[in-house]
Image (cartoon, rainbow, N blue to C red; front, top):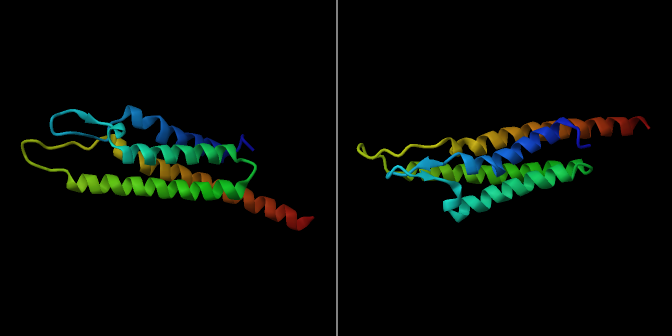
Length: 137
């Protein structure tokens, strides 16, 4: 059902992975310019996969098990993205004269993972409720 709480969580995860990366930079380069996700094809691909998985999960509201699997897959995409951000952060030069600043965009995968975990928890709760009702018949 579309009016369930997991749909709200999934829509928020869709916004976090599909809209907010255009707004918030990942970090500032040493020359002072903002570095957005569109400047690297790997980030574009992973944010796109995360957004697509959230959208497919919303649209497959009648298949709760499929929704749950898509949520897990989406978490994997976001963990890979987070790992790439951590790797990139550790490799950024930290000279005293030109210190690069990390942007709020690097925390978007964490927010998305939290929202997907909450959605999967609600999906599991619905699945358990349906199974318990089926036992009574």
